Image (tube, helix red, strand yellow):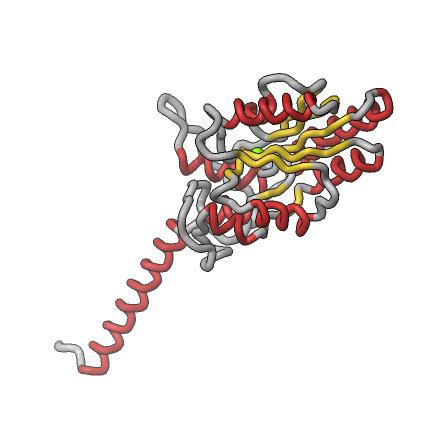
Length: 253
Ligand SMILES: [Mg+2]
């Protein structure tokens, strides 16, 4: 029996609804969430081949969203604070060196929106679902304080320790005013100096940062602690102690 015109229309509507639902489900699986999941991901381990990139991203989300990252950051900064407070009075002209990104300021909103990819160009108009270009993000001054580092910063200043920021952000790309403004927005006030990387002048980030610490000590300061989230922040000397803040989200050699 042939369907009536009314029955055909109803079937077409049902198929259209099913197709739309399938499309939306597919998009939901492809598009990174704008917020943390309700429960940690629990994926089966993959062996015998390089780690699965999608699984690694979900491990990073678990690490950040369910407290382990905050715990590890707090642990690293508590050790730095104890050392700085202990040494501040024992050293003439003591100084603390802080890296900025993922040490003093968190870019989690941008990293998460970009599904952990690095995108230099593009606006951030689509946040929080993303994507968001790195230059526009830095210029927006929206990065938030990593609270235990702000606590260290204030404790150091209270003890008369000079505080210097050394960042791999490039002077000509991310304007100094935007970086200074973001530091102020996050509560980092009355620091001593901010060293930004001049383009093309150093072999790599580590060489630049080491040279700046050399200059700080050549000016008569003693760097008692150097705090960063990358080994390239910390290698090269010119600090009594180094403190590594966890960052499994990206790598700067
Ligand atoms: Mg950093």
